[in-house]
Image (tube, rainbow, N blue to C red; front, side, top):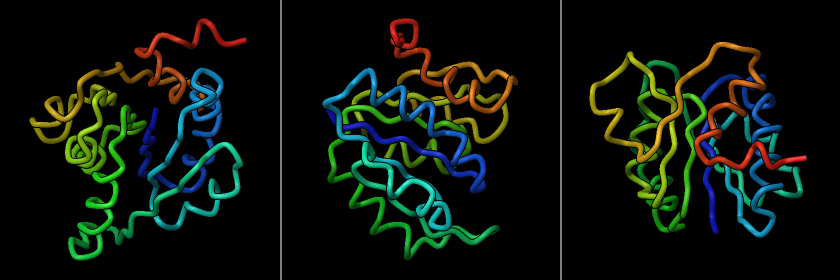
Length: 150
């Protein structure tokens, strides 16, 4: 099994995602886990031994950088992910989730943003405003394994 976790947020938010990534690893020890974050956040995750690949998306605030993004999206699509999880639910993460065509695409149900976002995911989690670590753990609750973790 191959899983892609997506989080386009600031450095601290990416670091806070680590317990949710660890929960994925504990539930699927045989899975290959990849993470897609902004390029500046790659160093936070790249040395975790249980993450097989950290992809960095070039980003400049207010600009889409299409020329540098398309080759990366093409590479991600060739990975044939079984599952993807978008921990933020922004438009960019939703669109990338749809384009990479993972069999199961989980994302946050966010009422704002473009109307097609709901079509990008095959499963959604309701966004809860609790502490940030619990928010990321709550995002993967629809995969129904957290109650079985030690």
